[in-house]
Length: 374
Image 1 (cartoon, rainbow, N blue to C red):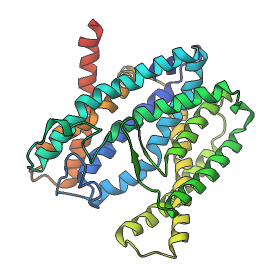
Image 2 (cartoon, rainbow, N blue to C red; image 1 turned 180 degrees about the horizontal axis):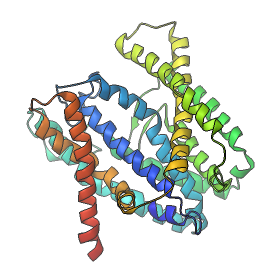
Image 3 (cartoon, helix red, strand yellow; image 1 turned 45 degrees about the vertical axis):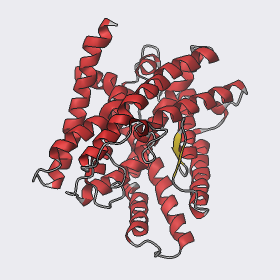
Image 4 (tube, rainbow, N blue to C red; image 1 turned 180 degrees about the vertical axis):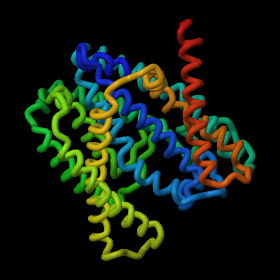
């Protein structure tokens, strides 16, 4: 992804997309560190370390992060995909994406997923099990876990290539039309998946995905590619009136979503109005929040972080590899904090910062020593 960003606009490097992607990876680390300390108990049965010292802040932050972090990453990838395809024929494009996404996925599946189970059992004082149960196709609980993103993104690349071959011209759609379509289709899709009880995860040997969100992710990916084709980021930044308005109102749908979602968890089987109306409010809040937060993230970084220094450059180059290894780093550090008397919020802070720093140091050391010699 970094290589594509460098070439995205000839002579005009899109630094803010580099920086935004890196910030999203930090939020992923924050989210997964929060899973160790969130108080709802949702992650207790499958997360690699379940610390009895919990806090409510981690859970609330995770709800907000979950709304927009993966859509933003898919948006960035979608924005960069047309240029990558433009420079290669279809077969060369698929080979480059397979090398970029699926080779790391295979390696991580054979190494990091077994480490995940080792940490999971050790943290709970449970005996280790037969080695054949430590892989994503046989572990029975976690499957691919955080690695789900890689094959899903590869699938999106394949679908985008197929769409390009049948001459579907996305650039004929205006940005406003695309955003409205994403909101309407996404809302109807998520509502139907909930009402007809198709919520949850589909897990296979090759691909894992969240049933009620997979279509939304693909539409956001296509939105990113549309923004590239419409050259949305090429004009100079002018007024900020709309940006300020969204900053002022984004909290409304976000709080609606959080309020209804928490009611589902806190009072299962009880509804604020009814199951249908509550579900409508839930997904209305979610999709409005998603679009608002996606816009705010992209626009904020475009306005204020469209530059790069040595530290940002290093973090940007590390980001993809940090995503791949960070969960195991979180597990190792969380184990050292498990029986300590440190307050939960402080543990949460220490785990997030240290996991992000250590993951970056591991990747940076690898790049400067082993990879540079290959």
